Image 1 (cartoon, helix red, strand yellow):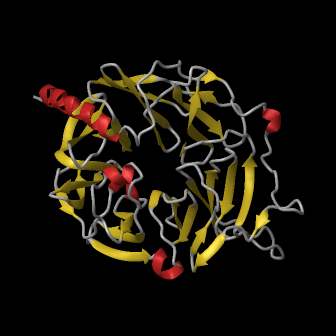
Image 2 (cartoon, helix red, strand yellow; image 1 turned 180 degrees about the vertical axis):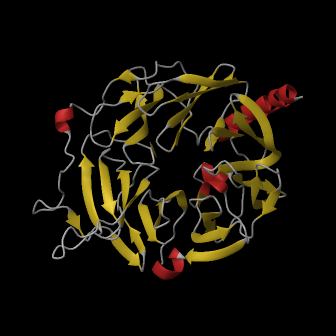
Image 3 (cartoon, one colour; image 1 turned 90 degrees about the horizontal axis):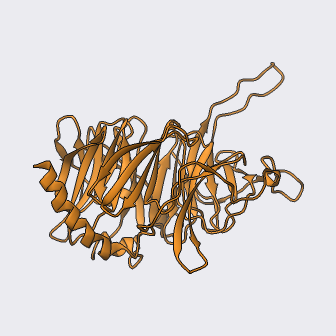
Length: 403
């Protein structure tokens, strides 16, 4: 029965790929081998871990633009989609005459135009460039949770004009990295231990696991399903067919290479599993209305949530019992397709939803407090729930809200 479902879904997602292919940048092409030592950023001598940006040779202080209380625009220029927030614990005073160092949160991100890596201390408002290796046009950065490595993804063009998607493991300290397979559809990282990569094949998809340093590569699954989107759910994977309002979507729990259907058929289905492996946040469309729900993986019970948004516009709070979401003030039209394709953008308010009580609390309304329209994507929260980081899809700028 499961095999029959997989075959039916595989046929559906082929059509889905044609509908939303303009949005997704990844192609079904031959691949390179894993872990080839190479460096597109120049020699290690180009590295400037402690390069200071201020004109007086000091880090840029008072960096970022405070547009409202607790709301800061970190960058004026577009950044690669995806940042990491690192909680820095306080340092007690060494002596009675020396002050200690207060806790802070450091946000690491990559400037899209240059490929340089920056670190922004939120409470001190200090910006430092920690690597100046140059690779223009990085579209996405997937970080290990310690901020030590970023898997950067960008388009390259061969001599015959063919566009390819390259993925490179870029160490934040400027050391040598390595290339992953070419034309990967997706890379996902679990904490600092495991990397999942998804490669299209002529018959579907190949999912692989490896260590962040490129070792211990092994195949997790070979599936007839194509154009999947994946996320870690504990040690397992939740794989979901790419969303379209015009086609049924399905979501599967992948455990040891075995697929178990957990959701679907649902139109416009998008999922966001929590890292604890207990729940999956998901959005879907029915009769031109969008719904946001959470699925308990143990009981398979679904709970409707009081606000409506897309799962991709949310982030799990550490502990997995609440989510922060960018919630559009108006959610209409052919969603999510037009939003994926860039034909539609939203103006969001940021809300926190407690999943135990189903209580939604307004965190900030950027339009009201700062007269700025933010279409929030790539939301992330540090381990202590100190700050919420997100990118504005409208212009690629990076923002932080002090929780």
